[in-house]
Image (cartoon, rainbow, N blue to C red; front, side):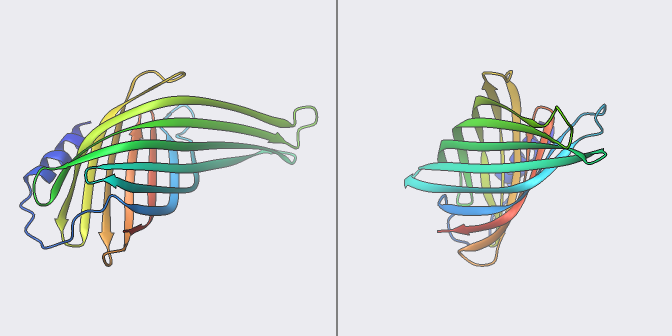
Length: 207
């Protein structure tokens, strides 16, 4: 939370003198993701996978967005037995943005999130099979998005998530983009949700 507030203050206070195009809220993006559970007892288990997401401006200050990410981890249990854990997360939401200055936008969004978990056991006589679970939640965040230079962007968001099987918890998001031209750029992002940390690195095409 402290890092989130510090970055927000820096974005709001930086004198953005570089000449650059307006930030786009219409884009598609995809890449690699890793989800890590902060648990000392389990030695911080983590899974790797991929994600895709997109945003589309439906009005001058309003956009809709969606995403889908999947991560998995396989474990060898000995004698040919294996355990595979998979987590998928689709998300759909709507966002609002407002100019704070020539280079900084205030942002707010709400989204519906679904968490799908699956555990598959194989190679264990009498225990082979798949167990699936899911939960739904709502997420609301506010933040800032800005352009420190003509070819870079940075954003920070903070808010809460609450759902059927999830207690109200803090959500934080730090991200940035380096653009090659008006369309293509590379993106990096970190998202914090309670005891989990998700890392993302991908390519974005803005329109």
